[in-house]
Length: 242
Image (cartoon, rainbow, N blue to C red; front, side):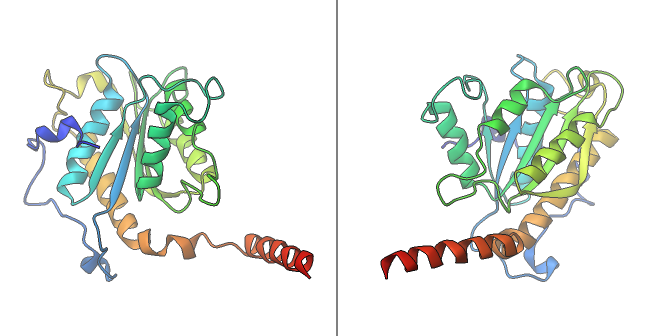
């Protein structure tokens, strides 16, 4: 897949370069990864001027600057859950991106006090298991939201519940941008603000957690109950052959 179009503009007018840090495995005291961390970004609005998309694009630039490979899923054309087969092209595209990723960023507007249906539909199309593979388990996750009015945390709280249900490692930090329509210029770039600084905080933390956990996620999510179940299934299979 081609790089996100937003990476054509890799300027950072809001960034204080003297204080910007790129997280590294060496600084964390862990073995460097053999490849760049792969981060998938999802947004929750299809409006022509979508502030959740603009936040995701700003995040993609920063993550790329921090050394990550990034992909952004465009939810336009994704059918409603259960209204199409699993082999629908947009469903397959989303699931392939999910499997590709090591970590993710989810950003949704708040609508009627909740995440949008567009955001929830993307998560609902991701099963807990694809054959023997759990596509979301053990991946890191950062959650963000944009608000049309005063600051709220309804959406990030809901996204945290979803992240836990999807067995993802959801980082402690989060971002909520109030009155998002005031925070972007005419070119769709974010203006300097504490909201921008918080987004940088969140992405730094996401990169750190991804560097820490990527090569250890299988161990981190290994479960006693599943080992017991697997052992019982194996015993039954062996018993049938005798």
